[in-house]
Image (cartoon, rainbow, N blue to C red; front, side, top):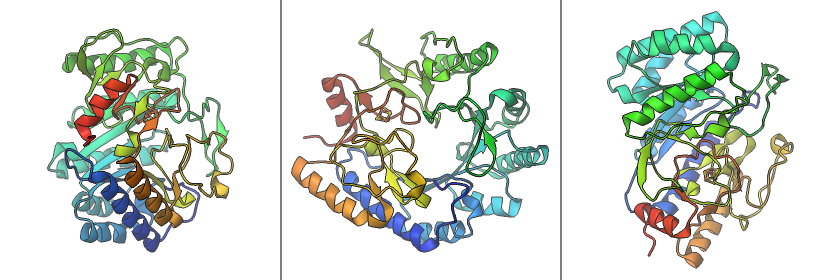
Length: 366
Ligand code: SF4
């Protein structure tokens, strides 16, 4: 991740980060029961506007062929750039933000149709439709008249998972007016609910989804941002079942494997987190230098915040290796949050016995 206002980072910094990611992954990998290829997901601002993004991709392809590369993009590029992305990315996620002008929105629509025609594997392309309360009809139009007719996979993403509760308009750091937490109307909530109810029924989950009286979608639960099917054991029944939408999102104090599946890099701020929105960490994590771009964050605590500075990532890796030597394996987290955002798909459990059983599915625990 890189903000829209900070200066671009350079290729040499990206190379250092790639080496860190690979070393971090290797420490965890030795405990994996099932081997998988790590996915590097580029997000933004828009990654493709940094000229060093393109040589970085070539570097990664050459030095780390085991990485799977995914790009999250706003889709407003020329088809020449688009062809590079199709040729070099394993998968592309287009985030459709309808705040842009008519010309930008049309460009994204045209690019989506062009990509779908030129992409061989339908699973390589996905659209996150950011369901903006004030541009609802545009979102529905995109779904009904572009995505469904062209067989493009999509997820209607509700907005407001960042926990900052910004329901009112504010001037963002790039000068744009935004509000990043939305309250949906009853009709909009019904659309969201019906969409996921239908998806759930396709995997055999008949649980009636809740409604939110005040339009706050966080109260009704959450799907996986990647559209994954998840398995849950609900507290009122011992039976496990598959679901596309988990009907609650508060896992405070549950044990969680988020650090085993995620690593979030903020290049412009020189920090790494286990996860972007949840920011869970263990209280014994070594001290991190908080630079000027993070001074305003008030929610950091001993179990929530960055895990290291990218410029001193070697020190973190030494600490992690020592911890593994002492404790037998990398740690797991205790959830510090009352709302789980895009970490919802990660293995987690309230009951320690359930957690042990879950962990042993993924990692060697003996
Ligand atoms: S349950 Fe969600 S919010 Fe909590 S630690 Fe796990 S991923 Fe993070």
